[in-house]
Image (tube, rainbow, N blue to C red; front, side, top):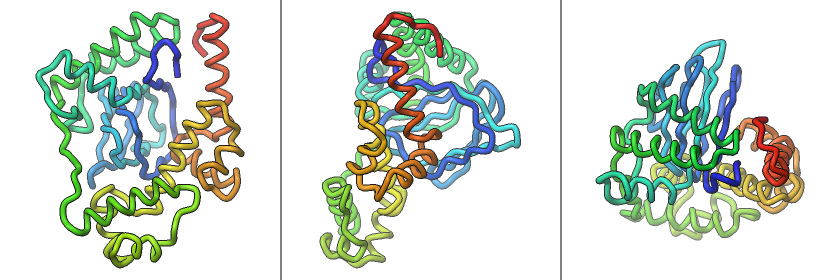
Length: 276
């Protein structure tokens, strides 16, 4: 996270044996592969992105992540917030509605280079260049591979029950009901609710809740809270449970994630903006 590029998370990473379980992001994901091949399951299909290619994920879209080959993969990733992408797209393309990527993988070495130039500019503290390059990446990708995302209005009794269940889990994240109680609250049976929820949101309720808890814990860590406090706030029974799920989904333990965030904030506060 770079304060001079608000609303955008940045990442450089290499993964070898790492496998990411099904999860979502609140932001868009624009991942440029520099070495190896990243695989991920998206929309019921396995996709692969190699050097010069990009993996593109829309907000709230369930997906996994894994290495295709034993050497793993290396990439640079931009995580722009939904409102930032919507604003850039509305200003610079003819797309209407909520914008999204049509294909989750594109082969575009030039766009991949732009992603790494955004990262470099941000690490050097060049906010003007970073913002300009981010704009260029989003515009290029949306013009070539963009379209309006479908609206998710609940249709049918099953979809409405799934939406009500989701609302209950959002409201009672730290103390959720059992599956049977959740089904009773939404006026359906457990099996029917499981099927409807997975159809609507891409994963069963317990997986969706774990993903929600990790995303919320991440925001609490960004705000300076300790992992122990975050674990209690989101409903994990203890910090080791947060550590396990956070590490599986985010890729690093919550303590290391928090230290990295605090270090980045101190670096920018003191004006020492060399890359870390």
